[in-house]
Image (tube, rainbow, N blue to C red; front, top):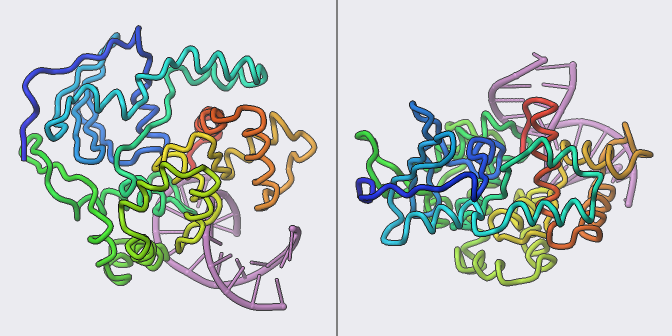
Length: 303
DNA sequence: TAGGGACCTGCC
DNA sequence: GCAGGTCCCT
């Protein structure tokens, strides 16, 4: 229950490029809403931020539950990583990606603090469009504890695994979750059985391959969602979620023989393996540039 | 391993 | 009518 902490934090965008709007609307984090005056209100784990976007800098107020607000924001958007150096490394290994990176200046991968928030956000994305995903994730957020007040409204964090496990399929169906109403509580109960949130934290320390295999065992989680969760919830940057957009881009750039050919699980796996062989633990970053660029160029889409 | 259909909603 | 992942069945 807190008002913003006293002093605004400023981020100089010339030193640390960050295309905030692109980063919070491309389907990697789902708890950010546009506010009047060029501002964004966002939640990450137990922290919340109100970010004013100015031409050369960001001005941030909010509350990080006793932690340093600026440090939490920098961690969320990987501002401690040198974006120019990272892009240069990608371009050295893959000069063919220059047009994709060139169209996406300031695009960064998010690094959400709370694996529960990110995991269940991605469970909402299966076979779904960004517009509807946002509503579903925010409905779940409405079940979470209040962590602040902004303009008279409570700001809530995402609920824990136990709260989601208690939900009934009927309640979620009424809330418009469609057939995900069945798998979301089942996935929460499966995570409970494996040790709850701590199990997800342990998977951050496991290898990418092991984490991916464990996630595949959860109800409603197939190869694509397992890669989304591995990449964003667990920070395994070798993960390459292959959805329809990434398939399209990868075929254009790397598999011209497969133009017009439908993606299959087998062929999608080949795409991920190819990017890992070429880019190592930057494969997830490469996926991100290709995905976001193709999403923007082809119009609306899912995640 | 591939190929089919069902699932739920909103957009074309 | 179709897109978009997962699951189940052949």
